[in-house]
Length: 123
Image 1 (cartoon, helix red, strand yellow):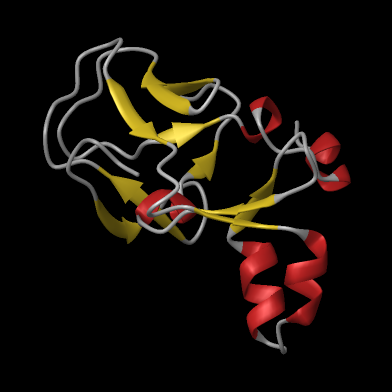
Image 2 (spheres, rainbow, N blue to C red; image 1 turned 90 degrees about the vertical axis):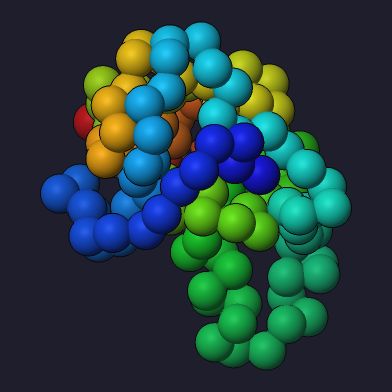
């Protein structure tokens, strides 16, 4: 769940992205896994869902190291990958890697937490 204010807007990285209306200092925890908001879905549970819901969940979730799909219940599902992101992952948290300006898109490196095979294609 985001711990800082965010909004969605057209992203120069890809489609929609998550932006912040406020300046964020380096080292600030911007997102933290919250089981009350963020949904953990096993592959068996996912396969029980009808289409197109199943495809949408796969698209907007990440596969964690335990093989569970994590579906962010807030704008987190719209955070885009960047090879030089302004945020980094630390266990269940996302932290500002540097000062982030108001109006800037928040980005992360999917390779830090996504365990699906396609992530190895990112450059």
